[in-house]
Length: 421
Ligand code: GLU
Image (tube, rainbow, N blue to C red; front, side, top):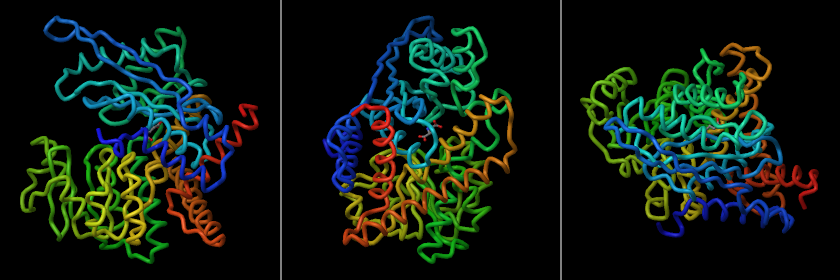
């Protein structure tokens, strides 16, 4: 992988920029450039043909100065330790920016769930939890779903953990099914949070959301609900959407129910009739008002950033824009709202889930969403205020840089108060 696309190097580079901007203490900077703990495990699973296969997995605790580690588990065939390290750093900044009492962590297993049976996935999920059980817990490090992991998988993982520790422990993992201590509203919370950010960003840009043209890359948990919420609640028009196989484009707008049906019946949104097919790369360069990368990292790079036509980029995926592309978008005056604000709805509602599990007292969906709205809107305003502070000092900074300054400052202060430097 090219050095400039290594996610961990990118996360370090972003931190370095923030450190320079805020004149971060050297010792704090040094601690924050590396994860606190990296665990690599190899998990044997008996496959359907009777043979045993070994799967490699990771759990990285990046920093727990502000609270227990927090972050999802990805099941992905191309998973790497460096990706998990980067994602754990981004979780640290995400929880800090939202000002929720968690540090950052992330996990991953190299596997292709599309080629596995449910029994094999369950067995791998349980084996992974057994392997990392000493390093997780409601007050140690709290996993959650991410790419290709589901509430059902979280359910198996909670069950396995409780079998090991011998008592109830619902707060060990979030994103669980509602029947098993999950929170109302958790499933679409990432997209919902993103839509609150879109609402605020549109206000700032004086852009009308009703009828605005939106292109979404990705039809996973984030992209799918972003489509539904953008059209049903905000009145926007989704003109393009894709999944891992490719996408479709119709300037008149796509129909959510029809698209869902096509995805369910044929396995890909590409088979939607009456729209033209586009590749995942072409989708990014379509003529639209809002571009939502909601799939994976490194999608907008120095190669295509000068061809982006959207007025605004809303990073619902983790790490979709590289630092070089960041600069190009900023120079071209395209508003790019950073991932660790835009997709923080997921972990914010995970926090609510954890609180509910610890108290054994559960909230309504309305309660969850109104609290989420408050937290994410406050984070948005904090970012705009930080940009203004720098502007007054004669320096223009991006929303991502402003978000970094806020988040890193909070973690550095917590480490200082603990006497770590
Ligand atoms: N995987 C989600 C993220 O990247 C959620 C993490 C969590 O809920 O802990 O933010």
